[in-house]
Amino acid sequence: MNYEHIQKLSSSFVSSKSMPEPVRRIFLKNYRAHMFLGVHAHEKAKKQLVIINVDLYFDAAVPSQGDQIESVVDYDFLRTEIKRISQGRHFNLQETLCEEILAICLAKQGVHAARISTEKPEAYPDCDAVGYELFWHKDLLRP
Image (cartoon, rainbow, N blue to C red; front, side, top):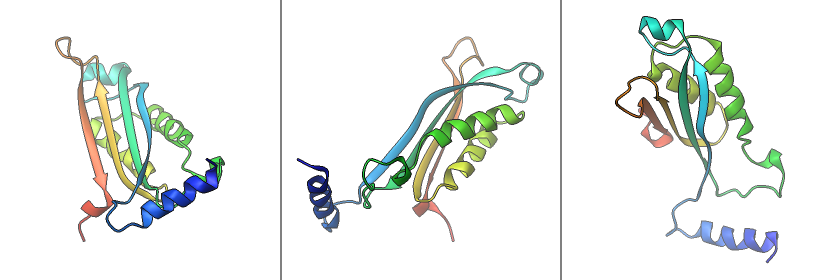
């Protein structure tokens, strides 16, 4: 079965009104950043491990144009931008960090939804982590 045949098959499924729109997902899983994050004095004095996860969802109704990186959203930008953000300054709140990551994700054309989470695994000795998660979907926007 060749690529063109698969594209024809997938477009016949996509055009069906009974089928939901297909979605593409790219993700960055468990990115480890050593960064300044927190409101406490010890968090401002010393970097700590922060685990970052990002899921981006795109419309898949338009198939990629062959096997070319230019025809899809390249996930390298996620790692590069998150590294830049996490090393660039001190964040008091995980919420602020997630919102800044969301802003760079929404700058990518075609993003329909995004989920960003952060975890501080060294915050307390009696739990695995404390964290924050942010979910955004284009249909959840208020006028």
